[in-house]
Amino acid sequence: MKRTLLLLAALAMPAHADIAVSANDGKQVLDDGRQIVPSPLVPDSISILDFGGGKLRVVATVAAPASVIGPPRSVAITPDGAYAIVTCARRVRADGKDIEPDDRVSVIDLKAAKIVSTIRAGAGASGIAIDPSGRRVLIANRAAGTVSLFDLAGGSLRPLATVAIGPTTSSPAQPIFYDGGRQALVTRDGDNRVSRIVVGSDSLALVEPATMASLRPYAIDAAGDRHFAVTGNIGGGGRDMDTISLIDLSGAVPVTVDTVAVGLTPEGVKMSRDGRYVAVTVNNGSNMPRASRGWSDHGLLQIWRIDRGRLVKVTEAWMGGWGQGMVWSRDGRQILAQAMLGNRIESFSFDGTHLRRGAVLTLPVGPAAIAGVE
Image (cartoon, rainbow, N blue to C red; front, top):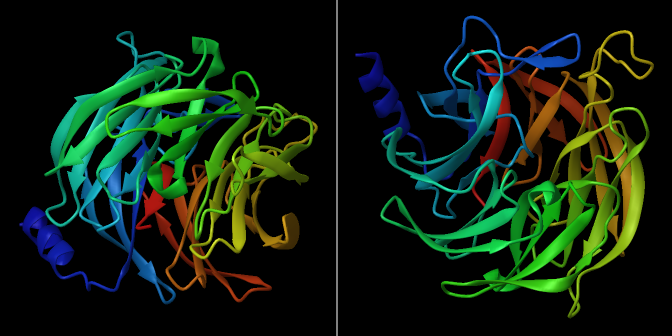
């Protein structure tokens, strides 16, 4: 009966609704700054959310493997809103005491609220990008040092090509498409580079030299006309000041044009749909041991404006600890931000100048990655 009600709720979603999908990890929790496997385990899941206009509700929940390891864009939604794709970078080891690389990828039919197909990518399958056509999908395989290209049709993924980005230690984390889907960038937090890839109909070609953003580029995003991309750089290791960087994509070669300090560990970056603003979740020491010099009991949600090739800070607000990903509403007036501590998804309104707190959802396990329709 409960399953039937969830499906009816999914079918009743209005076409104009703001829809997001949160990937939730039950395998990792923090114990005074140390990531551990909880006992007992709570299953991973996918939450389908309806938000916008100040509201926030769970439409349906689907059991599916997910992981907090990697940038918080390990889930993506097709442009038509029909399917979500989620990777699982880590699984629990056989002894139940730790985690190890995984490679599972699930495709979820959002209307039916169920997994319709699964496939295996590379070891440590992590960040996902879907091209504007909704047919080509890139997945970064962090533990393999590769990026894989898939064709998506009828809810099934078909492998097309895989390219080596660098050694396994390069840790390719998050890809994005740009140039109408003809090119892509992928962050490499293992060796401080952002690689450019030429994307063919069934091929990938790595282009050298790589772009240098800052230390350990990790999260990356682009939106609007994709004139710019922004990276979150985590080279401070939770102790020293970290940064975000702005990359100009308009020329023949991507060029980093600005880098600004944001605090400790910018876990996620997300541009507004018009490409004018950048939201950043900053851990702010909330994922560190309490005895650490930089420990804090809260994270930060920051908003930056892209102004003539520069990043200008607009505002910030306190949020839950160990922050992960974000999504913007279609009208740019609402932001959802994930906090692994407390298993929270927090809503904020944004008027172009200020952030104000709104509704909060508490989930059974930690929300680790999130995506909306783009």
